[in-house]
Length: 309
Image (tube, rainbow, N blue to C red):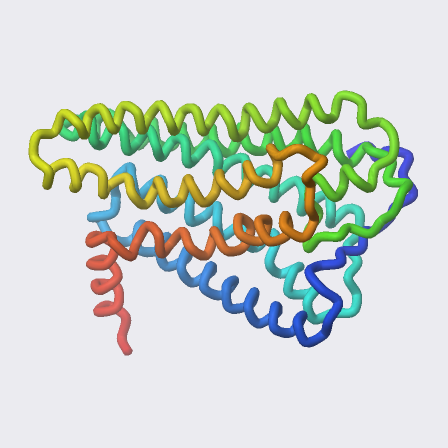
């Protein structure tokens, strides 16, 4: 990647606090969350791969979502743990570029994947008799591949534009990772057209998937309202509840940070929200999709019976 005329060879990540006691508490908290993220998502992936009952389009998407969350958390959390316990809070320019590229690519990919999962729920509820045929493995694989392709193409665009800035103001990032807005604040000059690019990416990666999700759920609601029995309506809605929770938490945190007016930009509040979608959300997803899921519980019980204790 071609660099701008910056004088920065590394960045300093301030993290959350400089108080040693608080840093230790945060280290333990993030370590626990990362451990749960790895165990939860890995277990869900293993269950989906090994149990034939979970070889359906819905679980194919859930397995890919778990893989994305596992990868996304690994991009962020190890560095956060280092910042909490190490006096060296520096991050090389190349490492910052790599973290920015992969985090943006995975975030954007997850936006598209959640939209594909909404369409999957629409087909499952509105066309249950031909669900398996309509959501063929080829179509599901296409949706996943397109999600990754769209995510990382847009990530390449924003990464190239961001790191050709001239970072002449400072090299201190008041955050726990190389995020877009703190990096832009460090840049001086050359920002013409950058806001337009940000709005384009916000539209293509967030607003368009949200529109597709809303359209899918409008059709889902229309289908559910045509079901005569209350029990049938509740059963149909229950198949969407996990996805709705996931979408609300994920898109809500992203929109809070990146669509608000820059005059109201607050590093402290945005750190908390960023922590949610970078660390907490990947930890919660396995529980969101499995706690009330009978098939996953049965597959987990089967796995425990196979593993000798």
